[in-house]
Image 1 (cartoon, each protein chain N blue to C red):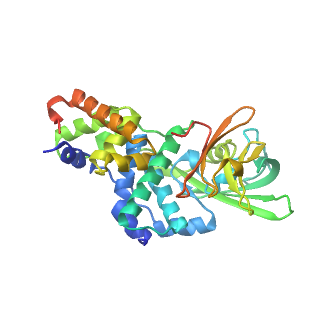
Image 2: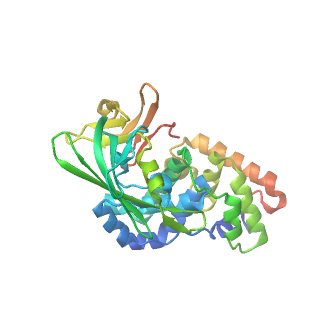
Image 3: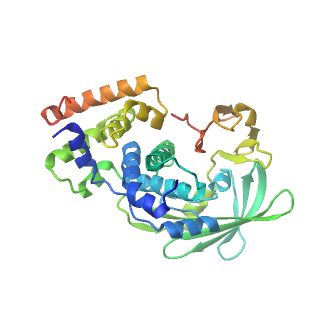
Length: 159
Length: 195
């Protein structure tokens, strides 16, 4: 199956953007990663098993593209995430604290945390998305959670 | 409220910027890749980004410039025609390939700051991009897979599996190139290790 590009964008672009932002912490780079991902979606004309398969492909492609940008030695026009954060309208003050805490996590923990809590992916799914061993994902998730607990104390549960 | 609910509420404030998919698809057919980043301005990036750091430019009238570039490991003379409009700076590279055929590469770009304000690239920024050296990957008509970097080239077909997928490192004199081609067709070629 295949969704029309406009429909796929409407449904999954924000997910791809949030995942890319978790990698690069830069709005412009994350937008570009999403842009490139959908250009690839249009040009590849692949057949997918179902909508979840489409979403997984878009997420993985956006994440990989965002990684390419972070590896670029010529990152220009990069705006600190703290400045971009000022533009965001959080529903509650504690949300901005959580956002800040997540942004301060080391790169390798941040995307694992994002896929687990935002995309509700299992350890196995995260392992496939990031091409990391399940054991690695498990320990990175555990370490990331512990760091969030350290930073957020009572605002972060033990669930 | 669970951690999951808190996290989802917090990160639901992130939204991708709108862009015109139809126009993007049309530009792709025309070979124009509009990027919001200065550092990745062309769609024909696989070829254009392979230009050498040492590319030189000579004015030949208007804003056309003659440049020497690396294409598929060979020094090639090309003419860059830069068209600057209010919204985007586009370029056209014309060169003659090894079989004597006239070829064109199109590209273009805008620069955007972190808050979505965008402007057309300056000629200098575009030329800087054209002059940047990045490794590239290319597929031959016979199914072979090649890596190019400056004047280096290597056939890596044997380093990949029967489906043309896999990971490998290619060591050149002054650089190590890291390649990853996965079964979904995602291709990464980089000067730094791929995670």
